[in-house]
Image (cartoon, rainbow, N blue to C red):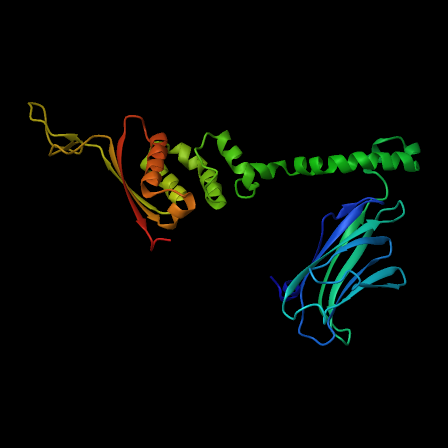
Length: 318
């Protein structure tokens, strides 16, 4: 964040409006250590301020409105009611009273010292559409019909959020930028077992690795990747594949034969080193957490595979 934006920020709830609609401005600022400091908010006179929201303890009569040519300037002195270095927020709601022409309304917020020097400056533009865009789909005779234009504006206002959503539809299928509430839905499309309680960054990483997890499903690589993302820890997997050695005419030692009776084919030993704060995040005891891991592993390994879990909760591995 730049030094200027840390001192002063200006935003609006809408950046595209029609005549007669309202727009809300949000100002956030830190009071500078300067003699006679003040906040100045300038806007075209076609913006009619209807309401202020000031911090607690600040009188509503404090803002002064000055008209200079075609601009309105709201001035708020910062010396008496504000503390140096503290951050405050102010909300201003205004109505747009413009003609039926397309135009941009420039608004500026400044922090000034006693001599009028600018300490910080932020600005934005509100695009005002004087006529309904849907008029271009009607015969030319309706171009000058104000009633039809305003009537169509109603539909444009209703449909604009939906049109915007449709225009950005591709972003809902990208796990890196899709809204958090869509992550479980996206995972359900590919049958990936996830929990909504997981941190958002882990859900994104898990769905992003879905191709690898399904391409190598049932292998140690896929299981290790899945568990490391799920636990945010370290995972090691030891596979045992060889059969026990049994004396007989045709038996001989090799890579698929092992001495001893403790060897079990298709047996996997899984060791997890998990950050201790995982228990607090999941609100589980150690036994409950490992039981959950057991259920997840059963979904990820072949049905004939047996496994054993060894879980270590390490306070240092955070």
